[in-house]
Image: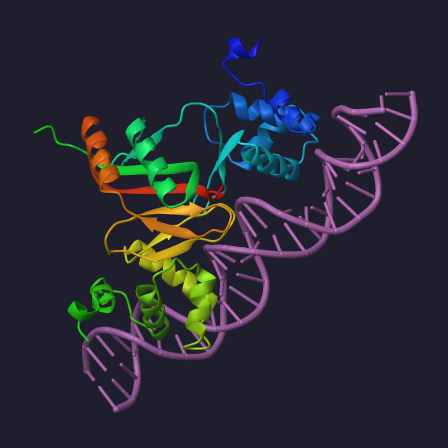
Length: 143
Length: 143
DNA sequence: ATGCAAATGCAAATCGTTTGCAACAAATGA
DNA sequence: TCATTTGTTGCAAACGATTTGCATTTGCAT
């Protein structure tokens, strides 16, 4: 199956080009993160990886996540309290609107905001690697 | 010196009204967080607090930070890897640009972005209560 | 196939944070 | 004021997430 068919990127070739060895654990982890839709933490990735090779270690998952993060393959989300959670980067970026009453999460995207962010960062002398925008709101009472 | 003169809020009265005891450690910590401009972590607050009362414990700092967070006196920022960092809430809203290499936090504010957020929320049928925008960037190498 | 640097698994270490508990101190009322 | 009540403290030990040292194994260029 080709990349064109799956819509996914061929990370193996990409990483090998960067001088990174494609080992058995890395191949498995890479598949897991590129196939999932959710935002698993390291331990969850480990749990899934073990199903395919039961001597993969948690350390390797952590080491691989750091590696993939540095290469822009995945994105890390830090939470207060809990563990970091990871997301396969490269898809279209989106932000979140959280309904404070129900806890519902609505995804949205605004090119204008993305542009403004870049502008602001440039003015401050920075290049943006990624960002996090969360709106917390309440459903408007349809008057 | 009055609140009007300092621009600061009288947290002690505020908290006491909420049924919270104002103890010596809490008073010191409260002063530290309301007087600082930066975003110290728990250990840094502890370090500063010890200067004023050398038997304040780190646990008390952590417990107090949680307490103040719940009462909206301070805001917690979670970072990947590092410890949570705190900021005195209540002043004018601003967003953050985080230097991923040094951990520096730069504050900024964009009315345009604030407006756009309101617009987006309205389109989605929501009213925004508050939001969090964090840009993660790397200092641009001055060519 | 072979050699060597790089990656692995394991256990122990580390870091930030929380918790159990006995001593202690803030608010309350006599 | 003092005693009572109840919340808070400091300490040390526990905890969860992540990293690291090291001996062994593996990818992969030759």
